Image: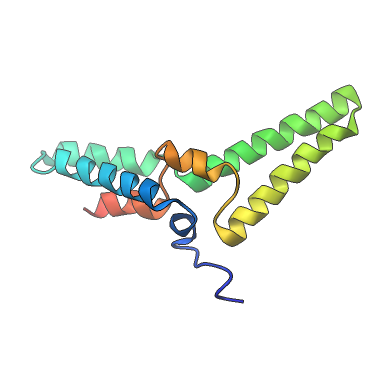
Length: 126
């Protein structure tokens, strides 16, 4: 079963197209080059900025939470139980992401350049 479930560290990158991973890696390398030779104050400011950067996990969690709340509100307000299926789908996507590192919104977020915690941390350490 371990071969079916990827490790927590690299599950998102394994579920992302290689060209997207390469694009994100290139953007990270360019950001590192931009700060090469920068003052200690500029480096400290950049590190603080990176610590506040929203990673793909946090972004997915917020989106899932907002969609679940919205669907629940619509069920209660309009008395239409069909909206409950949106909550069911969102919960299923979140569970799928937790296990496999992939869910339907992931490719969109990754193509938009949303990084994993490891990718952000890599820039901090560079």
